[in-house]
Each structure stands twice: as structure tokens, then as C-alpha cells.
Image (cartoon, rainbow, N blue to C red):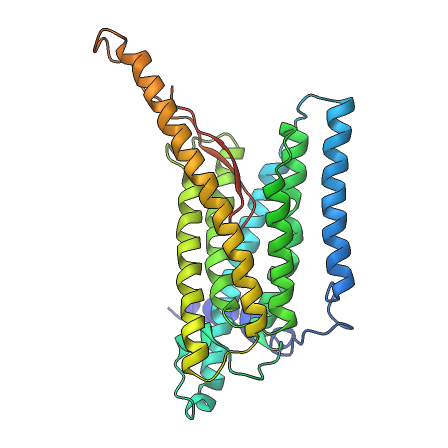
Length: 320
């Protein structure tokens, strides 16, 4: 029992009480990648590199290239990073609530309301903003999936490029304007990332995948959670006298709406295509003259290319 307590105390220290975490401050001079010029340069470089790589490989080497264990290693790395961010911001949010809830008495604010709606005047410093900064940096690692997709499958998705660019931009805005809602957004997103990238590692190493669209279902749950949280922020903004960074939140809500519409369009097409494929398969099994010998149905791994919030852009779901 004492050993478990000591282990928990050590984890809590390294994820929420370390001086570098407690004393973090978002600064254009001290935080790497914290300037607008860096943000736009990085996104422009990502878009240009992806387009050039796709063009060059299409012209001079129009055949898939095996990357060996690199995608699996990347998936495992992203799953571990996402799980660490989730645990870190969860412990940090609990610590911030414990240390600052005395100041909420006048406004009668609850912990859930604080998670949705930062008080006016909140500065981008302290524990939760440290993990928000780590999340922002991790967005650049997510971009590598685009390059993997181009090299392995010769496919360049406009939605994937747009999605990664939007998510990186939003992560920057969260820090720059101390935007409300970001704690719950990072918690839900990193939880989904940990599950999805863990699943991708599972299938990348050749193990059997699910017989249903695992990634798409995770994405639907995440989008539903985000919609509910956005409604909560809007209500609290008018009920509690304002939420910090509401202008950035409006931009965030618009960009999330764009991603939601794109994903719903994808999901409808996926469901329609799957339904048609299932009907065709059943006709082949049953035959034109009614039921015949029943064949074996074997589920192959569901491979959904996932690149973040709304970032499902490719499906290969086979039933034989």
C-alpha cells in the first residue's frame, strides 16, 4: 500500500507539481514556436512539403513504398504522448481547482464551470497551460501521418491537410488568448488519440483489427462531446458575466463546425458505401435463386486513416 502511495505521489509530482510545470508561462520570447510568424511558416511548410512530395512521387515513382516499422513506431509514440498529456492535464486541472477555488466564492463558480469557462483576466500560465503547450507541440508530430499516407498509398487528402492545419492553429489560439473550454477539449481529444493510435499500432504490427469502424465511432463520440461543451460555454458566458477568450472561442466554434460538417459528409458516404457493399456481398452469397450454402464471413482489420479531430479520411473495411 505504501509503495502504491509513493508511486502515485511521484507521478503526481512529475505531471503536475514539478517547478517547470507550476512556473510555466506562455511567452513569445521564451516558449518555442510561440509566435504567429512561426505558426504560419510551419503550416505553410507542411502544406508545401505534402504537395511537393505527392507531386514528385506521382511523376517519378508511382508505386507504393514500404516504410517498414516506422508507422507502427509513430502510432505507439503518439499513443503514449497522448496518454501522458491526458494524465498530466487531468492532474493539473485537479491541482488548479484545489488551489484557486477559494477565489470563486464571490462568483459562485463550480469546478465544471471553471473547466468550461475561465474567469475574465485568466493568463496563459501555470499547470494546465503547460500541458496545453505540450499538446500544441504534439500537433506537429500528427502531421507526419500525412507524409506516411502519401508515401505508402500515393493519396493526398485535401481534408487531411485542412484538418491538421486547423487543429494546429486552434491549439496555438488556445494558448495565445487563454481560451475557455480548452481543458475539456484536450482531455477528450487526447483520450481519443490514445485509443485510436493504440488501435493503429495494433493493426500496424499485423494483429487482427475490429469488424466495425472503430475510429469513426470514437470520432462521433468526440464530436458529440465537443458540441455539448460549446453549448455549455455559450450559456456560461451569458450567465456568469463572461468567459475569458470568448473571441477566440467563437473562431474555434466556427472551425469546429467546418470540421463537423466535413466529417458528417464523410460518415454518410462511408455508411452509404458500406450498405451498398453489404447488399452486393449478400447477393453473391445468397445467389439470384434464393438462399444457398452459407459461406464463412471473415472480418478483416478496419483501417481508417485518422489525423485528429474530424480527421478520418480513408476507409478500407473488408468482409469476405
